[in-house]
Length: 490
Ligand code: GLN
Image (cartoon, rainbow, N blue to C red; front, side):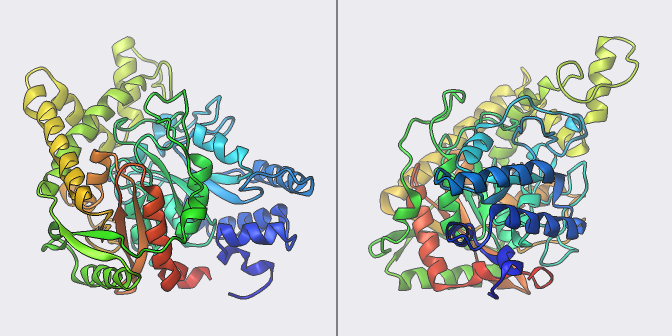
């Protein structure tokens, strides 16, 4: 890394924090530099909204707080938010025409917590519409390009957050993960993506997709930064009834405990024919490296893993059809012009406001919840969800973590899977289980397949974010895959 302010974009949050504390540069200088980088790299399409004015004002406030000795743990550090977190006074679109002009009157708890910790947000990132997708191609605002190869998808749904972090436009970004939307784009862009335990981070002010699966998390360039961010985001929130009142440890202070004695589960179903051979090789090399740090590898079985995608594609659409019924052209979002009557207003507002993938989910969800099919599909899926949770529970009787691939292939070409939803849905085969069971998981870079990043996924028991982060951090302390930067963004 070269010295001087021009290389600040390459630094992690922790490094930037040390630089700010030492007075090497101000938050305003840092924010100003990153705003210019964001502006210079608009062709990635990683952002829906850039909040330059608000960011510079917040940076000044942070600089003053620091001078007065009163800044929080993230004082003056730049971040961005996925455009699904409500931000008071700044539009929140969910990458949908439906919410194109929606301005929330309040901040999501995640946004408020990070602001209270002193973080400065520079904008709202592009994503799949209502977080439904694995490639960022369902966005009303267009595809996001993968910084490693502009013809490839950055993954989704948090594709804008992942691309922005990978391209060194910002050191950290919030994301949400309902079936893999933090971990899969992190894998495809060579970044670090953490999805916490369901209930660890408040969902208040996060536009709902599938409420029993949605969880907020972060995309960063190191596990250490993910620990720093999680410490500020997590905690009980009385405004989210599923938020859990569980103490928030100092995640950063727990990163260095040795891995000796840690039992890591290897799932044999993870390495079947569906996995790209080079991805498999990189993941296996990573497992050997963890063994070298003192962890032991134990084979475990997740016998119902292949049912996770079909189960998810009943449960998630069912919940989405219910959650998205609020967008009726009356209370929120897009309203059709000159409606004939109330039904026409509902029908046309929704027909015009939602894109094809969202409509597909709403139709599937409505179908599986309908009187004649509820037992056969929705109830059955809930039962299988229990089986999948039990599989994990049994595995965690034997091991402390489960390790494997995050995604079956490296980044795929934009347009490659858009005509075939089933192939697109299979991209989340390794990530969805953690959502169905509410478990924490992280994806960290572990090498390359034909010059494209490969992700290693670590999944832990409920509230074992500290173990997940520690293992990821120890791996990153002996490798430098997480420091690799795409050529055009150095
Ligand atoms: N790719 C999955 C889907 O399309 C997961 C999305 C997510 O985690 N938000 O639903």
